[in-house]
Image 1 (cartoon, each protein chain N blue to C red):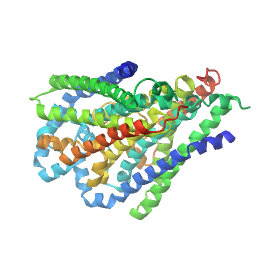
Image 2: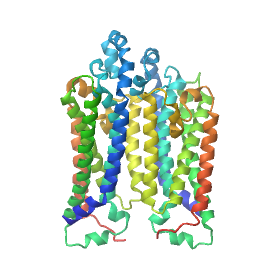
Image 3: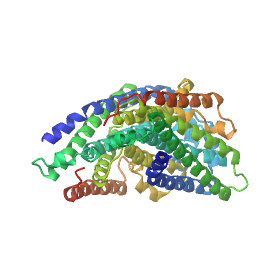
Image 4: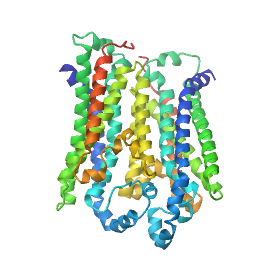
Length: 265
Length: 265
């Protein structure tokens, strides 16, 4: 558990910055609801319903019904999720690779602790950080929503969104973690994780403007749990299973490869 | 010029892969323009009935929205996201290399002033940015010529592609100054992703926030597409911001790097 404590300590500063960022995003975003609702968002959403998909995408609102408070919050949720994915990839690709990068691998490896144990403790620490990220988003959102929209605090919808966000973040985290465990070159593994994130994001944009592209959905984690579905209080069961299977597979593969590979010292 | 030559060579492969990614994006998205144009054609009468004020507040210009160039400005946001990540990674990677690999003593003991080292390294960064930009502009122009249905608005096109170059230079400058300022540069990808995505999501969130002052802090909004379409010009205050931030970054990097206490290990 020394290692766990050490990891949490070394990410303390990073975490504080991210927490401040989340509070700013959620606070500033939800705080704008009254102005937004007063600005006749109803009219706009009526017009938008009659517009082609591609056109709506240009406003960056793809398919989110902004005529209700839940829909409005859905936009903020979508933005926070993008940052969540960035956070998860940073942590996932950094937490293992930093030993080799900072030349501390020898120091750690000579300790009486197996590599698989190191791997699992680091994974545990990374998952804790993701949990903190989600918890802060959840807590801040709930606290501000109560003030802004006391009649309709969207408690259940919020819970669904936060669970969805957790799964998306864990998906990116475990993939980045696997890259770092499997590849020798830390630079390459983080670049690969970045490529995966950018590719999936761009495919999501493409899905937003082109019809009949649902077959691409499996490549776009941001689309696994759509805001419209979350507002109906459903988590797509297929993608729930899919993210779980991929995450577990990534962890198992990491635990298989990492103890065997040469360390770059 | 040996530092320049060395650094330039080191990044050739990465620039090639960035160019490949940009090619895919421009080709795939512009390929869908005819589909979009068909969809939107039926909507044109509906838009003509809407009040001009509403359209202006939505950032819609009927004359240009339906053109190939209008469609290109939509994907331009994402192209700029990607080129910005590349630019800041180049700045961080090339200037921060010695700090990251703990080998500052190697380069600083060469018979060369620090200013000379920094200038050559910066030139290598800008050379790669320039190559990427020239390539991107060429394929964009070719694709627009292929899919367009009416004459291309050349002055607007020039302003759009130029805004990509300005953002590239800005983010390269930020990368360079961050690399110089940080005592320890842990992960190039991590810093690059958090800086660029924070600013990018801030830009997306403007759809809700709509705070005029926030535009000054959000580089992705400095070269507003609608404004360019309506006026065929940049907004001067935003150009001022660009000059200020880029200038301070580059001069600041020079001032700090030539004076700071650099630890060899």
